[in-house]
Image (cartoon, rainbow, N blue to C red; front, top):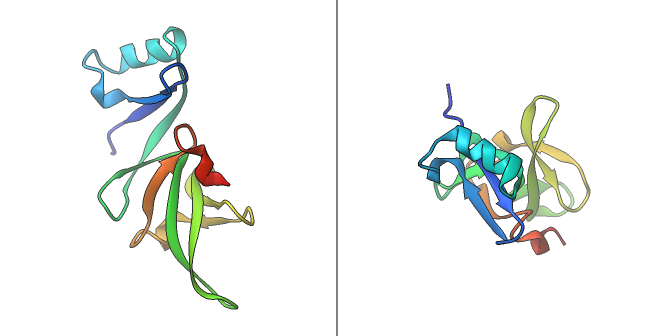
Amino acid sequence: MKELKLRAYNKQENKLFYSRDDSRGLSNFFYQIEFGGLSNPTEFIGEYDKNKKEIYENDIVKFEEYLPDEGLKIQIGKIVFKNGSFIIEHIKGGYFNSIYNYMYDLEVIGNIFETKELLK
């Protein structure tokens, strides 16, 4: 069973806060979401990118994909939870792929809260 790790966004500080950094435990982290200005909690998906960085829902990732007409191409996507699993939603084209097709070179390059400009 994977460890429950969460993060939430503080809009006033433009910063993500991680449950693992809260010495008072998960209950205090949830209290901060409810009453302390944290919003949009997201979950660690239980996997790491090629640089051993934790992957969370709403992370922006870069990966290589082979396209029949174009060959190997760098793609950008967002990690989303859909139909019972975490998948990559392609930024351009709006289609989805399993993260497990790209784990060998998947790289977290940002998230939708702090680096949303990567979605353009």
